[in-house]
Length: 215
Ligand SMILES: Cc1cc2nc3c(=O)[nH]c(=O)nc-3n(C[C@H](O)[C@H](O)[C@H](O)COP(=O)(O)O)c2cc1C
Image (cartoon, rainbow, N blue to C red):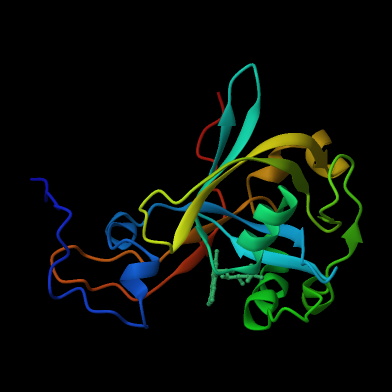
């Protein structure tokens, strides 16, 4: 039997923190779809480097171009403002060893902060954009802004699409392909999955890939 969940949020889905269901659609929690986890690096207007832990994205394209598609960037964030102002950003994938460093940039992220220093990250110049890369990242995507749109028209989050200009990949991950999909590879964000029938579900998680078959 399938449970069919319609878009009207039931009363028993109560906010656990202010504006939870304005910032995230409640379907996010009903679905619990894991997304790859990464840091977006940009420069603030005052020249300080900014690093933002992010997820909720997809990466694909066709023979023409390769795109980073991010439908949920908060419009009040430094990252959104930096991307719209500079029209570029860098996406940096890090292994789980760096998760706590990434978290530090969430805990302290005022306009005055150098978020590379806060997270203990090393700044590396990009090849084709001004935004900095994170040296510790095993895969970085240098992106130019292709499109920005407030999909829900609520002024809360925007879709940002970046066209990937250059990829920087650590030798250990280009030589040994297995390294990308295990303990030291891509991290995934599991964002508080909930039972649609009673809104129960408290945990969030960080995951890595357990490859079950090679073909
Ligand atoms: C796994 C994960 C956890 C996050 N946790 C928080 C959080 O606890 N608080 C928060 O405001 N943003 C959280 N975010 C969102 C952004 O990291 C946060 O909005 C970011 O620090 C904004 O930075 P900026 O203003 O420098 O762009 C989280 C994102 C992810 C992917």
